[in-house]
Length: 233
Image (cartoon, rainbow, N blue to C red; front, top):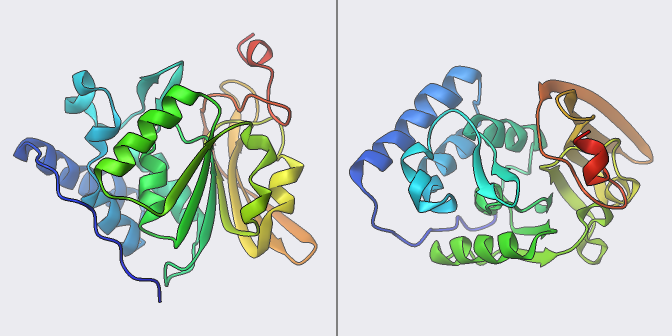
């Protein structure tokens, strides 16, 4: 079993700690997030450090927040829902790929549920900021690189889970190829305002696709994603 990872303590106002506890109780548990590992992890990780200081009071509200560069940090429930949909190994021994680092919050959650997390961000400033937040918490099992996430990160494949936090027109073939036998890929598919969260389960050479829920994400930009201007037309 992989050793449980401890976060470095940070000073935080008691009202933010209370808001985080209420987030878990009211936003996650009441919407059938029932994996105790996810509830425990999201109850520990200080989401507010991953948003702009001016928005920290809103960090635990039930909705996404802007993080600059026309990107967002997903609402807490969506982070929990997508993480639960991965069904990662219960001994925390999995290796996970994230496409779309963004704020770094999703990677922080995954870091407590997997042995190793590899995450790709196309915007250098966001990748740098995410690294700073992860370092602040002492999270050292997450590796970030800047690039086109649609190609995945084949050097570290295969992955027990792949999570894509941006919408694509279809599931990128390189990501399917990098999924471990028995692994799951979770990704929003579709154009602006018309996306479906899809889970792909690999069984040998077969891929079983399942639609989970309607969602709205920023676009996956790149060779295997959308043209930025086409998506926003």
